[in-house]
Length: 161
Image (cartoon, rainbow, N blue to C red):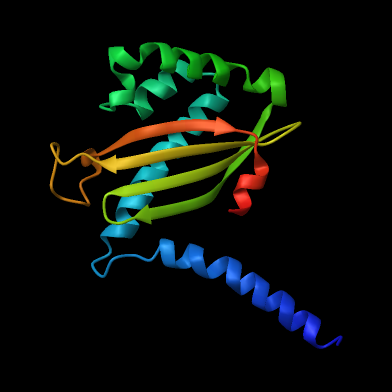
């Protein structure tokens, strides 16, 4: 029975890793890796901007050309900015971030998750990009991708899904 336990643990770890590896599998021409890397860089700049207290400016840059920055969404965006400004007061000083997940759903949707680490409690950020066909038919064109959703929460159990 003792020998079976390490095998069971190894099998469980493997079962957790396989879906993530499949979801991130690059296309044969490498476009997937390039697109995800470019989008991850945008989110990294956003999170670093937040950590320096440049909340509104960071959102402006992240949501450039996104429908989330249009006047119809102004109140929702203002609420999100206000909630973001409260992060340090609620959870402590920023300490860094880790990418938790990057998934492509088909060729035109990328979901990114980050753990934003604060002194007292971590925050999970979710950023979703979609390829805007009006901007470019080329998947690898970084300018064709726009944010369609950005949010954060502290529901850490969702990281297991």
